[in-house]
Every structure is written in structure tokens, then in C-alpha cells.
Image 1 (cartoon, rainbow, N blue to C red):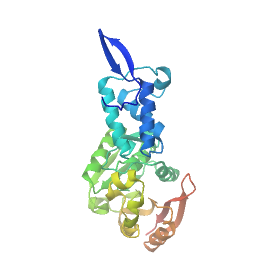
Image 2 (spheres, rainbow, N blue to C red):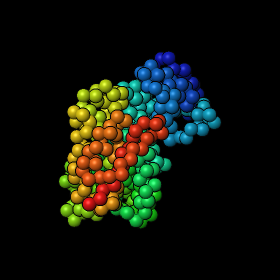
Image 3 (cartoon, rainbow, N blue to C red):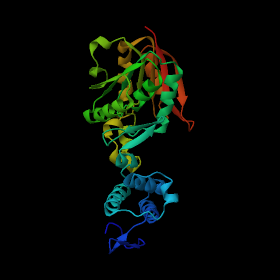
Image 4 (tube, helix red, strand yellow):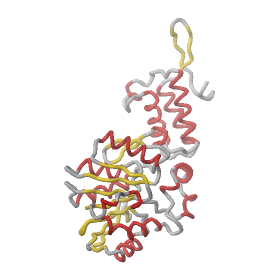
Length: 302
């Protein structure tokens, strides 16, 4: 039996046989308890979302049909999901999806999980008017930044690059689902791009790795143990990728093109200096919904 002896038992007659089965309500209560004991912060919510995934149900099912019985297959899968989440594997990797800017994105351990903080980068880009523009997204991961912009900007098109082939597989799934005009290239930042695209982009967007190498192990286990280190590690001071992006961006942006980069909350001043040294001006720092510095944007003028 996939659940411990503490669970309540529900008996019913099925085809003349007595079968021990678990109700929807009992499964939710048990899941919350197990995840809470493992130190999962949102234990109740995560247990419910895992149960909904297993049973292919919606939130109201728990309230409308609490005595609905789980099949043996559902019990087994729910138990496996709870074990994974108790081991602090991110909920999004177990479910294989994450919502971002109103859309559902396919995710896997190959990509950084899209976060609400990053939505302010999308909002700021859209505020500049992206309709009919060409957009470049470096370190695209799931494609959530690029595709969210293109989905809402009529006549726009874009390019995403990533050094992980597995990440680009997830991005391609999302591109097909959202039906946006985008091309994806495998490679290291600008090295992935065809030469003919130089000087063609109106916007350069990126959420590059920016965690200092020595601080990664101090992060929550969901991040430090499960999210791809390639998408986290920004080198000794966290600015390694920013230096490369700032140094190369001018070749690929049109004159007057804009750059928008997500940052760690303490990196705005240093990044602004890097951009200004590389020929950018009108630098602006955008705060996230928690009031922390989150995006630096600037204009490139030849």
C-alpha cells in the first residue's frame, strides 16, 4: 500500500469485493501533513496541486466531491509525487509546467523555473512599444520572456539563444503551443546567431545567470539542488555574463535599440556602469513587485 498506516481507510463494495481505497479529502490531508513534515512552505497548496494533477481535477473537486475515491493507479502516482516533493524537488518540475504572464509553459529540470519577479521585465519591454519590432532573448531557457513579449506585440518577431540543447527543447514546445514568430538557436550568447542578424534587433532581453558561484549552495534546496546550475552561476561576482552581454550587444542592436536585463537586487549600480562603459545611455532601474531592484534597461546609440 503506497500510504502509511496513519491514513484513514474507506471501504466500499466493488463488483462484490471489498476494496480498501483512499478518498480525495483524505489524500489532501495526508499530502499536506507529509509535505509540512518535510519543511515544504506551501504544503497545503502543493499537496492539492499534486492531487489535481494526478486525478485530472480542478480546485473545486475537493469541496464538491471530497469522498471521491482514488484508483490504485492514482494512489501510486500521488505517493510518488509526494515523495519527490518531500525531497524538495520543485513542484513545477513534478507537474512539468509553470504559469508565467498568463500563459502555461512547459518546464523541466533543464530550464530555470519562470518566476513572477521576471514578469516586470516583460511589462517594461511592452511599455516601450514592441509592435513590429525584432527582439533578441539571450539565455532563453523556457522561452517565457521572449514568447510573452511576442504574444502581446502585434507584428513582432524574435530570436532566442541558449547553451543548453535540452532547454531549447522545452522552448520549442512552448513556441509551438503559443504560435509566436520566433527562431531558436543553440550556442553561447551571441555566438549562436547568424552573422546576417548583426545590427537588426530593436530589443535585447535577458535573464542571465547572476548568482555568485559561492552563494549557490546557500539557496533553498529547491534551487541549489534541482535548478540547472548553468542558469544560476554568474561567476565569482555574479557579473560574468553581464560583462559579455554588455560588451557584445552593440554589434547586434540597431542604433536606439534597448537592452533590458534582469538582475540580482544588489547588482543595479555595477551593471549600469558596465552598460554605460559599453556605449549605452539613459540607464533606468526597475523595481519588482516587492520593491527590489530587478531590471536594468538602457538605450544604445552608435
